[in-house]
Image (cartoon, rainbow over all chains, first blue to last red):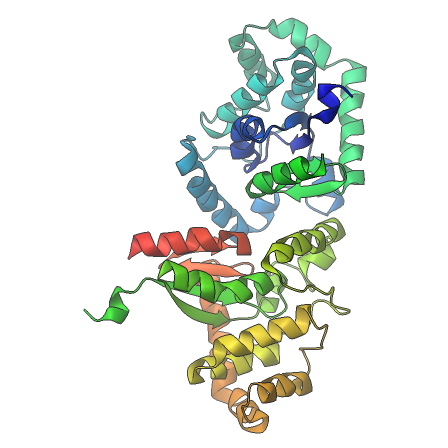
Length: 204
Length: 204
């Protein structure tokens, strides 16, 4: 067996609009490295999953008490991680363009940097990550050619791939983000990252 | 100042129908004692809060993917705590009678034992805790007089007290259970108990 086969793997399912995906995305790589676990980065869209549950908006907007709590709790989560949190002036922002670009970036080996830059833009810098121009600026800041990347991101094939990922999320029982999957074992929420890593190590 | 004034206090808000309140109720006393924190036991009903959010059932039934995940996750949570978990044949069960009795039991100093016995009945023994007879059996098992206790539990004053508690929950921003409150700081979920205890110690 190759070393790759032996390495425990965690699939990290994230949505760029998702608040708790922000701390998860920022810390998953270091935490996985410390645990000796390989990460599979899986950008997906929550929108279709929420629509299937009857929500046309974030549940944090649909249920205001839950939303008020989440922003306070997220601040408590970010503080010990030294993560800046600026309440976004728009919430949720569309993660569609960013997710399509993330697929390309992951293929090309600059996925984690792109993912973290988009989360920082949304939740630390209050930038409109739903807009193509903002995503192009982020791509450029990573010294990639925005026009070429966006062209690859918007091919029919790449769009279709994101749809298939959404169907896969449904089959895995994913209903929120961040989610972590080890084999068929599902963990939901930033605060389950450690449990998921331990599961990956044990399941190897 | 008295010793009581100096002791940090955590309010533990729980609903007998709530699945994650089960591990929280079973471990809160030991965890609080270890942290040097006093617990205020606050039974309440989630039903009116859920109805206000448009749900006539547990959100774990309203949203099946979330429900399937919860039962699996709860098993993972209970296992290292050595807590038996038997998927209840009815869910959710009404916590109304149990909450009214819990108020009396807490006043009389046998609250924690009663609370744990009811949770064990619901989630480890699959007993119908919504029924008066089952609650009476639990009261008797704790060597209290069920008839006398149930008479005190069903006075107009005790019923009204539970309603006022529900209104207080709303004012505190509580939207689920278990919840922990330190001053005006709200923590939601069994997995936030340690954070809430640390907050209580710091806030003293």
